[in-house]
Length: 104
Length: 308
Image 1 (cartoon, rainbow over the protein chains, first blue to last red):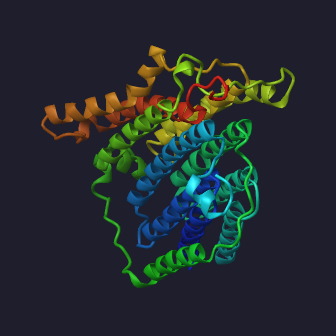
Image 2 (image 1 turned 180 degrees about the vertical axis):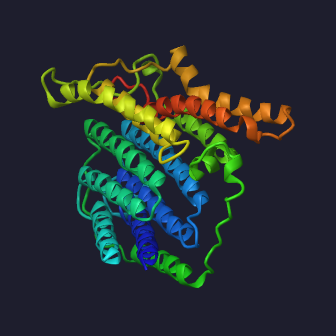
C-alpha cells in the first residue's frame, strides 16, 4: 500500500517536472523542474526496488549515483545560465521570449 | 496508521513540489525545492533506504539548494533574476499529465521485479552494507565512471570562466560580518561536520553511510568555512587541489588494474583483499568527491564584473 503511494507520488512529480520544464521560461526554474523530474524518477524506481520480498540494494546504489550525477548536471546548467546572463542580460531563451510576444 | 503517515508525507511532498513550480520568483522556488528535498529524504527513510535518505538530504536538498541560491544571487547581480508570471500552459499540462499517467499505468501493469539474492555474494564482498558492496564491488564500473563524470562536469563549469578571471579565486566573494550569524556558524560547524563526515565514510562499510554521503558533508564544511571567510577559496591553477580532484578516480582505476594483474579481472576485488581495497578506494574517493562537489557548487572563478 505504502509503496503504491510513493510510486504514484513519484509519477505525479515526474509529470509536474515535465510541466515546469515546458511551461516556465526562467532557466533557473527549468533547472529546478529538471531536478523534480529526476527526483520523481528516483522515487518511482526506489518504490519498484522495494517491491520484492527482500529490499534490493542495487536500485538504492543506482539512485545514489543518480543523485550525485543530477547535482553535477545542475551545476553545469547553472554555469551555462550565468554565462548566458553575463552575455545577454537575460536568463531565458531568446526564442521563448519571442513566443511570449515580448521584445527579445 | 503507517499508510496514513505515508499518505500525509506524500501529500506534503507533492504540495511543496507544486509550490516550487507555481507562483512568481525563482528565489521562492529554490526555497521550496530545498524543503521538498528534506521531505523526500524522510520519504526515503520511510522506504527503508537510509543511504539514499542521507544522500538526498545532503546532496539533493543541501548542496543543490546552495547551488540554486548562489545562482540566484549571481543572476540578481546581472539583473536577470526577475521572472514574469506565466499563464497556464495547456499543451505542457497535457504532456506532463500524460507522462504521469503512463508512469502510474506502468506501476500497476508491469510485473513485480525480483531482487537478486545476495545472501551468498555479500559475505565475499568485504563490507557488510549491501549498498556499499554494490557501489564499490559488484557494480564498481558505475561508480568509477560516475567519479569521472563529476570531474568532467567541473571541467565544464571551469570552461565558463572568462580569461581575465582565470587566476581569480573560485566562486564569488562572500562577505561575512565578523559578529554575524554566518561567521559564528562558520566557526562552530566545521569541527562537528568534519567528525560527522569522516564517521559517515567509516560507518558506511557496515551500516548506513558511505563515501558520497560523507564526502558531501565534508564539501559542505568547506563551503561554510569559505563563505564565513575562515578558509580561502582555491584557485584553478593550484596543483594540490587538482591532485585532490583526481586522487579518487586514479586510486579506483589503479585498484581495478591491480585486480586485473592479480588475475581476478578488471575492477574485480579478490575476496581476501576486498575489505582493505574498498576502504582505500573509499578514503581516496571521499577526498575527491568532497573537493569536486564543493568546487562545483562554488562555480567558475568570477571577479563579479560584467562583461563589456
